[in-house]
Length: 160
Image (cartoon, rainbow, N blue to C red; front, side, top):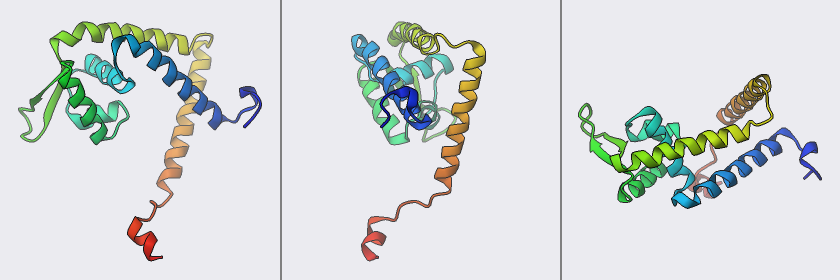
């Protein structure tokens, strides 16, 4: 590990940004008694409207089982409601409850403050270059992941 972040590699810096962002967002959510996952779910539903589970999970970078647990907890708290999708028999539509709308609007302002603070001191050209670089790194990692065979199952590993 380098002595300072100024000497760190790009992967280390990306991890440091992620950790710090997670800590900042978590700390700002304490008064609302929300997790980061619940925060993002509320923002996506506010900005994009009702959604079924799978597209919502993709929008908030969760797998479907995790998103399902998050949604169930939020339904229990009265933040979300679920209804059968009239266009698809087995699908549900998830939406904010009317009571959660003011909270979601407040969270939208919180998200704007966090986003502004994150890029403070970066001019639009720097932000664009950083975005391009980060997207390139994500694409590189996706390509690396796609090229790696999945780990053997426990049975196959035990057999070898």
